[in-house]
Image (cartoon, rainbow, N blue to C red):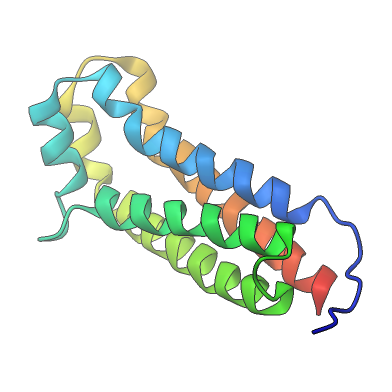
Length: 139
């Protein structure tokens, strides 16, 4: 089975780093505020806590980017899956960040926590952007 030579691009590596950043930002509230407040924060607008879905998809995105980068998965297929995962994560985080806005100020007095939802959105957009970059490079 021969495989065509794909261009060397840093896009999947950037995708891995951005997916790991999403995971790190999802976990950060557990170090900033009490765990009970984190539960309220993440499950405010939905029945299913958003951080579980976002964390799962970001972890899968790490595997997808690594498979496409290392040649273990067909690069166009990996890029397409990464676009879907990154786009869904970005849209879900955008919706959640807007919906949870009124709750943020009442949870804690930690001033840095007020910006957490927007930092998570930036990380999610970086994930979606790197997935698009990877797709553009291999397609």
